[in-house]
Amino acid sequence: VQLQASGGGLVQPGGSLKLSCAASGFTLDYYTIGWFRQAPGKEREGVSCVRIADGSPRYADSVKGRFTIVRDNTNGTVYLQMSSLKVEDTAVYYCAADTRGHTRQYAHTCGPRYVYDKWGQGTQVTVSS
Image (cartoon, rainbow, N blue to C red):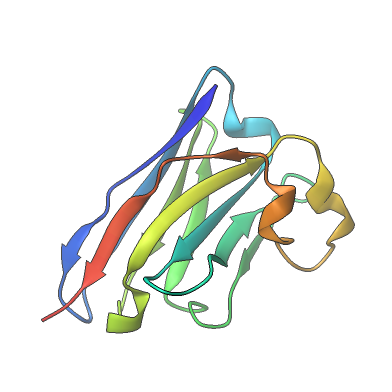
């Protein structure tokens, strides 16, 4: 049972990347899925999530209007479309699943990272000219 994040790479400021999160051993369709990122020397922070309770997306203020999270139930994949990328978006990006339903208590946010119990290995996103 594991998650796999992919799609990272090197992109110039203002460019776009699309990250994918897929699972093996279980399906993502029934759980809140979150994207997190960790830059060197910084704590891991929440970027976005798609909630299972109401299907609605949530975004950190720093990425609102630039990132879009999409759940594709036809192939059990969650995507993070990133546009207008900035140097400060450089980080390792992780996807995570809340398979225990703990994000339900966080009605308007994605919840803290410790409520997510399944994590992928991360994919590097580097924004640089």
